[in-house]
Length: 518
Length: 40
Image (cartoon, rainbow over all chains, first blue to last red; front, side, top):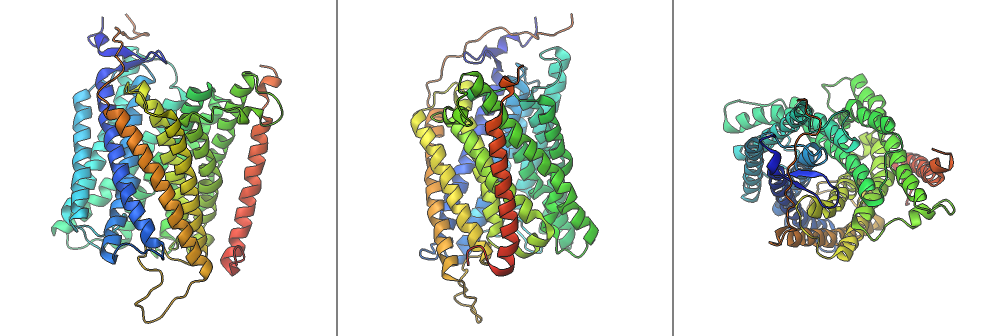
């Protein structure tokens, strides 16, 4: 019998085997992720209330400090930490597999956690008012860069751990054949994560040495090229993870199966080969890059990934439709959708995330990613209007929806208030849509992004905006308040449920590799 | 699997709605940028 046979419990709902050392690690990753989400969310509401001209809450210095904290905590810490829990879930629980090196897993977590603490400490003590992009020659204190490096290294090692887990699991016979679609999607996310995080480490290490005084200067253009290999690509990890979660939630909520697995796998492959190159839209005015390079990357190659998204956009609803029709919801065109389990936060969150991402995030991304439009709108509020319906309305909402399944299935914690959880999903989703609408239309009317005072009250030359633009900034504020309420509800439900000392009993059962060769 | 079990007519409608929305967005984006046609 395997030495690890007694380290497993059986999930009473799914019958999957959960390796207890992996469960503990997933718990700490998920809890730390939610803490970062809360921190980033508090920053978000303060920023929204500052962009709302009628309130204009924060002074200028705090606005930029909190904008830095908001960007780093939301775009990097919250999503990547949650994905680390997802990566572990995909390689162990889904495959009834064991985590081969739990101590290595803890080392990676400690590296990432140390990074989170160092970065936030440096930001809140005023040592890194450089915004998420930290473009040189703006310089932060060395610990800011070191914190991000530690976080990236921890994440890289965790991705390597994921690959090792798959290789050892197959060798020992815990699973055989192709990976299930969810694990395959996460595998694609991990491959994207590896070159994204390596780009991050390669970019931040020289800047860290520069801030220490070891290197005299940094080439601003080279920094931007490297940074966007990290900063934008990190959002593509989210994309692959989010789509994988949509498939998983479809299965968990209505019992759907992918309409055609090969079709969905091909769509994931298109992400791998096409999507990261779209990040060149950040570099459209950088003189060191040739025009052909920019046009090629922001058009042809970006569309390869877009086709991938369109394939998923057909595959996921169609698999849900087939599953629902098989249950007898066959009247008319939309009987299957009307009678879907909307009262379950998992389904509501998944479908809402799909709609917000598909109709809002994807379409605005393709439109604004093209060279001609991007040249005109990149520094306006239209750009944040786009990525708040991708990373927040899409990814974050999908992660929230999964959390309501993650808590009982993986962490053995009952979710308190499922009705409240469903309400939370809708409040958050609608709030983000309102906020992004305000941002997008204000941006169309020329309102700049990342700016403390768009009225330019103290400037010599006044830049008047139309009343509509001011109204749209108010819409941004109202949506922001609503989304923040939804976010707070999520954090409270997740925290109270996760920190409840009463866990569902672990049904410990011996588990040996099913396909082991004797 | 029979043709009935493969019925995804609802999804097809959703896809066409999405396509119409995308073309609308793309076209109006161009106009909005040149003359703020979209919302005046």
